[in-house]
Image (cartoon, rainbow, N blue to C red; front, top):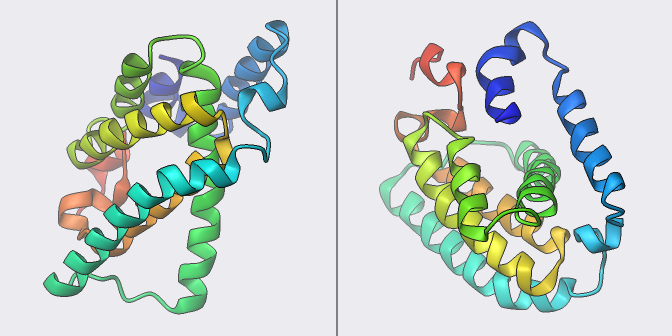
Amino acid sequence: MAILAYIWWLRPLLPYFWVCILAFVIASQVWRRETLSELGFRVDGFVESCIDYGRIVLAIATIILIAGLVSGTIRDIPLEGALINFFIYCLWGLFQQYMLNGYFARRIRPEFAALLFSLAHFPNWFLMATTLFGGYAGVRVYSKYQNLYAVGLGHAIFGFALYLTVPDSISHHLYVGPKYFTTKF
């Protein structure tokens, strides 16, 4: 709920309040004596989860990219800009998977965690649908391998493929919250 309150009401007034939310999450994990390794910040299981999860992620990303090529909706982005954006998306994907899996999925049922993840993308119906599916897949892979790096990378690949190919008229430039309504495409 704090995340939705931040997205909808606090971000315009207190743009750095997310630090307080993150501090609460970290304090909760320290209180429960959860180590970074237990949360999934570790290298063991990375290769195995990339092989298992990566096949699905790469297959879906390939289908998305082929659909974008066929329909002519690939964004015209210079290679350097695309690489920088992908790197940033890797960090953003890792952070989102940390919140989804390292915090919520460790405390509530996986299906409910995926549903909350989807609701955090309200009112963007496109993102809500894709994050429900992708969030549930990420939770399942995380529960098997306990590796945030793998699910964060998968999140970045999948999300970046969507960003590159899905027109803003559908994706609304991946905006959520009030920005979804105030930005015209």
